[in-house]
Length: 502
Image (cartoon, rainbow, N blue to C red):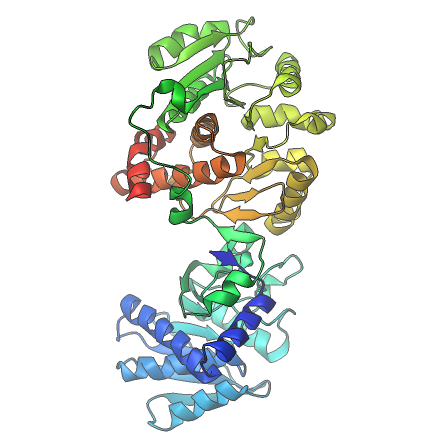
């Protein structure tokens, strides 16, 4: 699914109205039907609905929703905020509400006493839509702050009032609706994917209102979400006469004294991703750990007893992953530099591999084109410098990927993948149960395994992140978010592949 800027969405709306053809008020009705349908599935008629409708088309959506809910026997009160000239569709929906007298209409102006909100009421936010770029002020800001102070449950239409669709770096969040649910149309807004906006967006859902497919296809956006169908297409059926050599040989350089578990997690997840052979390069003391804990793996021993110091002969391998549990000793840094200089196959660098790299920015130029870096936000800040918020960090991520011709997988609730050609993918699989030690090591193994099988680096990154999250979604069904371990992701890789191919 593409993610567009708010200005692009308005152009797509206009194209749909012109070419479907559908008149603007009917497109608004289409949206309102979806809003009301969602509402009746989530709330009972015993809850009063308090609608706050601004003068624009966002308020028009709210007024149309009010009429549809009233027709379904919900108790609805509409507060009409009088701080601007009503749009044509807003005025039409106001008249439609008056005709059957289904809904109580209350006009509110600056200086009026704001209405009381009972904790059991559900507030519908239709104050501002995505067209607002400035911070709300005056009467509108007072209404927003009143809702935030008193409402227990708030549902935002399209976007929480006061929030911008893209950059909110200089936003005064005291003037942004704090929604529990956000119901948007056709596409999510970019701002929904960043941590600093999450307390205001809440749970969001995209409703398809059948905007014109041609303009959606023709309109460029660097941003997309990963979807099951696209990921499935990356995995052709396996040939009957395939053998272990067909699916590649992955090398994982991982583990040091006290952190051999990371090597086991990365190695087993690599094999579970479908690669034919896995070799773990570990310190000498780790030999018995690997042979006992992961009998399917082959072992390559470092010359050091306790840490990584130098890569082995790289000839046999089709992909290499480095970093899980590696440690940050200077000798390991020297070994990483040697690897960067010698490797001729795709690389994945994670965890301490990234921390070592960040200590030597002059090595960034040594990164082979198409290398995959998988940092969490703090690791990325060490690589590229600190950012004031998640939105600014993702801009640095895009710049880093383009400048050094690498793929940067920035891990988080909506893991973002920046590619060398400027494309950006958000992942929507996964859940908070995956926030546990070792989860990143599992991802490193999966991506390395997919690379070893021959997937291009961008595809391996996208598929690896999607499957990693999908395994988490399979695991949480039987375990709960609180009880999940990183090893459970490996256990549920089979279920994730079945779901992908279903």
